[in-house]
Length: 127
Image 1 (tube, rainbow, N blue to C red):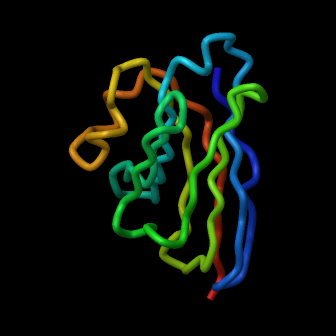
Image 2 (cartoon, helix red, strand yellow):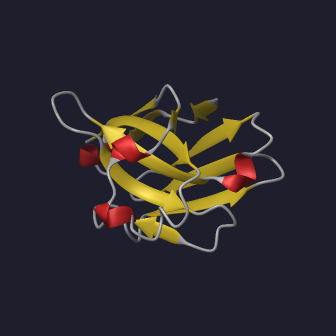
């Protein structure tokens, strides 16, 4: 239902733009979040955008470097990642859910609250 794209290999300090797209006609009714995961660690929430983009949230690890936007007409959420660091290396997933105001409490939410997931896209930042 959700498909990520845009991952790849980039040097430290570089930029990448991830996209999360859907064919779901109700796309504009749910919030979209980005998570990332490295082997052996749990899934880390990094950003969220509400249905009409009135709320955006970021983790402390990416605040000021990553920027989330959405285009409901194109059924796409984008994550612009700047000033990338080796510790940003991970598989990045987008996830969606209809729960109201889920992005407003993003810092306290858990990845299991999100009902729809993409397959993930690998981001590798070389030092």
